[in-house]
Amino acid sequence: MVFDSLRERMGGEDKITPMGIAHHTLFTAREKLDLLRELKADATGENGGDLGFDPAEIDQAIAEVRQGVQNGVGSETVLKGDF
Image (cartoon, rainbow, N blue to C red; front, top):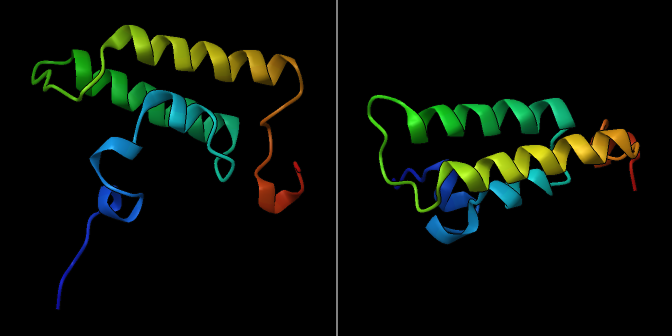
């Protein structure tokens, strides 16, 4: 039996990006911010592994989520009727 990772289920390495998280319709704004903050901690922390993008890109995605919340978008998931 083959076990796949979350990354593989989302389409492989190149599918997970900070902006991809920021615009994902199945996460609430809070979930997006939590994921992005965790990602930033991984990118800038002690282990600071190469994630394929820099912390500035994560900051930009966080700003995008916050802007969306100010505009009234992204506080609920699609399952709760955003779209």
